[in-house]
Image 1 (spheres, rainbow over the protein chains, first blue to last red):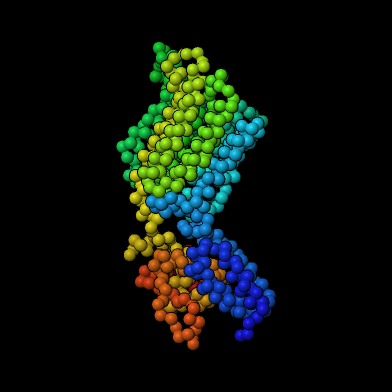
Image 2: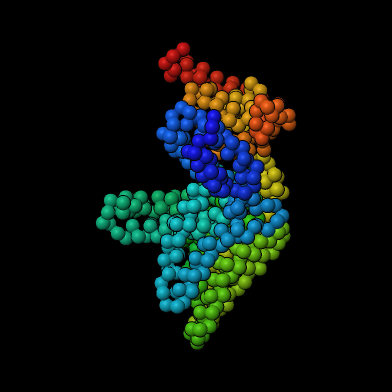
Length: 411
Length: 116
């Protein structure tokens, strides 16, 4: 068959479109794909002329779009560097850029807030919904959770969890809609409220602990930290009772536990336990999950004498550490130990800043009791216990991660 | 081998049809594509992207392998790459076919199929 200009034009255009595939894939299969396309063009033109070619192009464009996206997101060495960390090697810089996106958004928002604009609040309440969309899309296409999805997922979990908390209070105090009446019906009996708000998270935690324990992810240290975390929740929940220790009564304490308090403190723990499901693929890098949860943390507490300039500087350093330095340092760490070191140093630095701010606030108020000290520092203690639990949970499966990354992909 | 096979079950339609196409012997990409069209009465038309994406994954999973020997250049384009089934691929296609046959048998028992 003599060369046809329509076929030749199609062939040239398709050759250009092959650049949508990752370089390695294109070099390996590009010539074969072009040859097959050429054969398809000849057949289509022979059977249907130009209209046959047009019909073929419709099918080809759909096929090309889906398959190129699939190869881009599933290839470990793809040009986007998106999905897999190579074991015992730092994440490529293109992948680092993807991991950094949520942090950069929060950092810029923080600068905006310090310069008198109100971006930061918008970020805290809205960014999570937008950042989770690409993670869901890529996860659905590739059936794998991408590394750069860990921070957005932690952030989304935080937003969704706190929204659930606010939903309860908001609807209980409003009675102008059907949904609010429904919520009122659900929560008017305390026992229902306790079942939903306490038993729900507790059941999820128990399932996750059971799953992780079955995979031998719970080291003695992990058990210890989960115990410490739960103890801290129990103490923090009843802080007001502890103030008056002379009249402390266990019966009264247990009968008056506020389900909402438990709900708010259990979110971080639940997320950390959920991370064990992702640790089989991403190993200790799952520490990015709780980091995403902490990303929108608002720094508060200062002495009244401190100039605003210094406060702004401290807030900015805090945000740089948690939003920019931490994710980059962690994913660029080559070994399991290096990831642990980077996570520990950054989290301790961040909590150190928080503690310093709380000390300022604490010193400037009138002394009440030793329980007051705990009140000021309980969020920091819970964060430390949570991160320590995460590091002890995620480390023991590093060898599984290696195995998994070397396994052939399911066809 | 049984444990290795179970991780690939059930096979995706593209992978299954490619394996069926290769049961006749080694074939190049376009020949596989045409065979799949014939198998399915033209209802399943693969593009080059789906075809070579599946081939890539099947090579990694050792279900197929590239044939070393090239045909006579006078008979065919020597740049074409030929693929053939491996032992694992042959086992995978028969296990999957048995599974599908069982599904069809159940469908027949439940009178879902309108023809014999």
